[in-house]
Image (cartoon, rainbow, N blue to C red; front, side, top):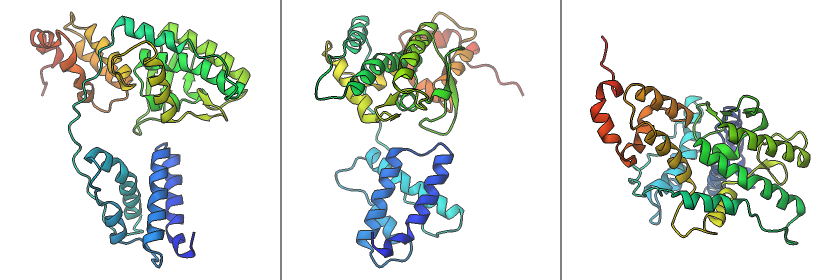
Length: 316
């Protein structure tokens, strides 16, 4: 880097440390800020400080960008500027995000056969190839069947599963503490007993490969798996025996709808169950969990019959 580019580096390093300590840092944010720093160096080589022009030009929407993609690109820069403004280190204004387009994707409704096909494929990891190290093959063979069963049975996000640490997983009591998540809110998820036993076997086997590991699902090198690794493996094993389109998020959606669907004969207690499900899935508000209502068969009728139980009377 040129000497003139160093004015941004201490600020970015301070911000990175702050977000890391707060458990709010990720690879995407890091990559975006690096690109922003490189852009400022290239386009404004003589600059001695951050200016509004730098931010406005970087954050201008590209013709090829959708609002959602654009928002993700500028979000780390917005957070960085907000951090600086709160500490009176800049008077540059934050960029304004565009409203995201409405998501028109319809989650896939799994059939029992499709799920059986998928997990059968996960259990059939191809034999060791000379193009991969033995340890890489062993880690994949151990991890794939467990991590996707965990997503299916717990409803946690893919990023939450990838970033689980050994200290976050209580296999004696079957409770997972989700600390590294989409947001900053820590939450807890209880494991089904069958899942707890599978994870105990996995934990013992992985301890032999990585004694004293920090990551519960360690990638080769004892680091977290990447998002691309998880998505690539889902596609590989989903389409081995299935032809319908599905994405990894559909496992989380399936968990929510299966739970809600099991309550359709209940009135009293429905609201409490919904709150518990919302907390378990890491939603900040029950309304976020309510997104799944319209896709659950028969639930509208239940809500109408038991509206007083579901929506309690306000007590002044």
